[in-house]
Amino acid sequence: AQSVTQLGSHVSVSEGALVLLRCNYSSSVPPYLFWYVQYPNQGLQLLLKYTTGATLVKGINGFEAEFKKSETSFHLTKPSAHMSDAAEYFCAVSDPPPSGGSYIPTFGRGTSLIVHP
Amino acid sequence: KAGVTQTPRYLIKTRGQQVTLSCSPISGHRSVSWYQQTPGQGLQFLFEYFSETQRNKGNFPGRFSGRQFSNSRSEMNVSTLELGDSALYLCASSLVLAGVLTQYFGPGTRLTVL
Image 1: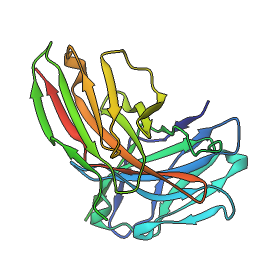
Image 2: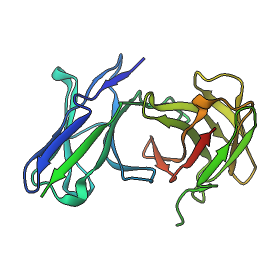
Image 3: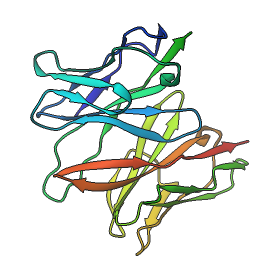
């Protein structure tokens, strides 16, 4: 069974500053990892995902995340925060699907990113 | 392609009533999952349907049920509503891409139980 811990329910940064949202996971097998963003009154949008291969994954809106197996982490970063990045961010983990592609991801509790002008 | 559609977007019910929520997935997607999102519990998986069959189920009471039609549209039903059922209910339409099941979420239905 997998689990996800997102450190910090709220992260506050100034516009232009580095964004770092932390995610640690536990899984009995090499996991698939995801970051989603949720804007107010909207559903979740996939930012990026790690399945296999390169451990540094680039996503949309300038975000990237690095899979570190030794640290069981998948932290999300962005070099320079923009006001429009203010939203709720969710990390999710799943086990690779069996043939047929069925899996159920486990989501973290979310981190609210606040961007100050 | 059009995105995932959920109807209605907002719903107010009273305790003891029942409710049906609808989800239309992206064309060509055969898997639909449902999630309940609350401030206290976060995102919790309800169930997943694939080709009209429930393939996975979360830890929710039997009051929560769902179904999927031949056109992949899905409905979820909650009977005998309780105050604690107030939540944002999200539907995710899924597709297997390069062996990975990728989910696309709808905007959700905000259910308020009074």
